[in-house]
Length: 65
Image (spheres, rainbow, N blue to C red):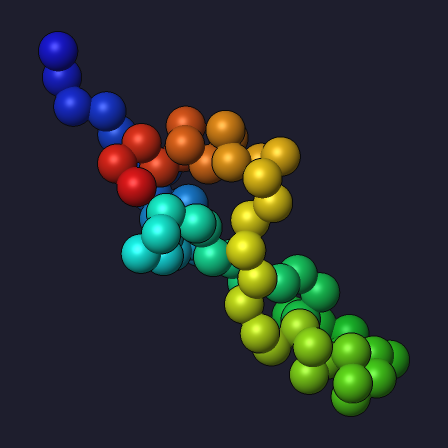
């Protein structure tokens, strides 16, 4: 059986923690930032975890995580 391929786009966007959770960057931080408050932009800086509802999709994208 050949090796499974990881999704290269997902590899660049997600990191796996030591406990097996997946870390992601938050959306809405790329453009049109003048209309967003400083507080909102500051909150978007921090990384967040992928929701448990999406973990089955993540396992498909990153089979060797």
